[in-house]
Amino acid sequence: MFTQLQSNTPPPKEGDLFKVIHLHGRTFEIRYGFYEECDRNNQFAEPMEIYPDFIRCPQHTFEGRPFVTAIQSPCDHFAGSKDDNSTCEECAHYRHGEELLGICACPQNQKDLEIAQGG
Image (tube, rainbow, N blue to C red):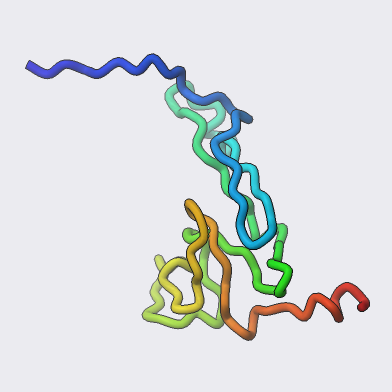
């Protein structure tokens, strides 16, 4: 006979804080939410951790390296065996940080922040 384990912890709600990640001088708040509106309207779907969308809103380290998530689609400079399901995490330039966050160490993707900031 199997017994289902009961958890005293209530499921997370949309907007609840999952974790604060400090990485390369930046701070990222990871909150629970939904990626798709259809999930939000599904009574059986629970909120999940929502990571920053670095494609839509790029952010860089102070050295000019772009932040990436391990699961995002790779760029044109992907170094490795690439197929339709490849992610940044599989690239030789990916440097894992914490959870699903990391940075891209590809020289072609590094920004010169002094020039970009007018300094």
